[in-house]
Length: 182
Image (tube, rainbow, N blue to C red):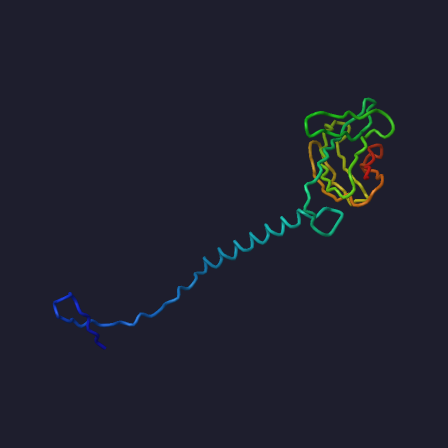
């Protein structure tokens, strides 16, 4: 099939041109491209799932979008050599455990608050004894792993019921204190 195109304004000449049908060719995705896209989707999905899970406290089954109240707890020894928990201020000040009785501080929190407890074991290992401690609040499903020297763990829970609850170390019965939720 020939079509004629006019060239020039006043030349009056027409030249034949050949029209060619262009075939549309869809580019096929290569195997590597599909692999890369699939990898990106998996990574983004896993990251989204991890982010979603990080908003779920240990004692409820749904995400809680609140800013947590941070409580810093460290292990220590009282002046008479007993193990104890001590509260560490996030501003650098310290609260020293008192000897005898309930050596660990009372933790006061408000009902409905999201609480993030950060525990660190600062008791140095000795030749006679390896330093291992944990932190538990049974009523709120707060259970840390056994922490060796200078290991730490953070646990977030929702203070959803009022009352006084004991926190403790399962390995050392003298390490206990009171969580007061009002």
